[in-house]
Image (tube, rainbow, N blue to C red; front, side):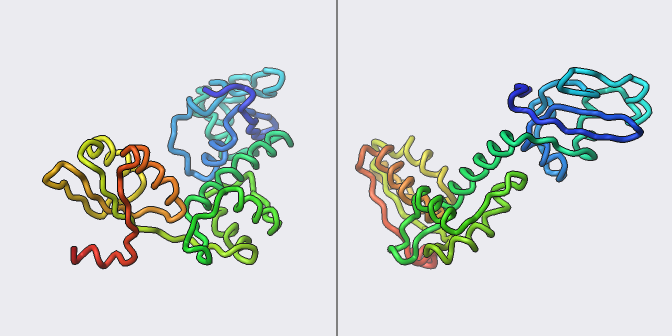
Length: 241
């Protein structure tokens, strides 16, 4: 369950009665869209249905039975969310907007590059500044992932930017290959790998171009600075190697 401070109220008014439940705001939006895949228990603040949640008043059981055909809160809660309205305070809306903004900025920064600066990644600070300059407003009620395209449209007149992947060959000495290669695989798609006779490891990975700096830092970290990397300009070259 979540805390009361994290929850918003979903309210359904029907049959002359009011029913309220306390739920995580992002989960409530996912439930309304039919996109929720988690456990209901994890995203509610109470296994209960209220007539007035702020006062703790509960509706009569006969009212629950008449409207929902059951008195089981765990069956009623999703229906209240799906059919009702999500009540969000100004403070909660501001917090949701800031959280979605941070996620949006990080998503763009990790995937986008600057085509005028040798395809270097855009730092999150630059993305944030450019979004502000473009006057882009993050919608707190929409998933950050669904706002990426609109954000990019707003950014392009302000900064040179495009989404792109990069393919990098990396070599780890034998002393670091075992544990190091496992940590590098997390970055993207492993195109190919080879274990050399001396125990060293060579791999070729494709991942969002904006993650290059993080990748190179991880290579240095897992190999004590002894790993080597090389950008593969043409992935078709991999077929002939």
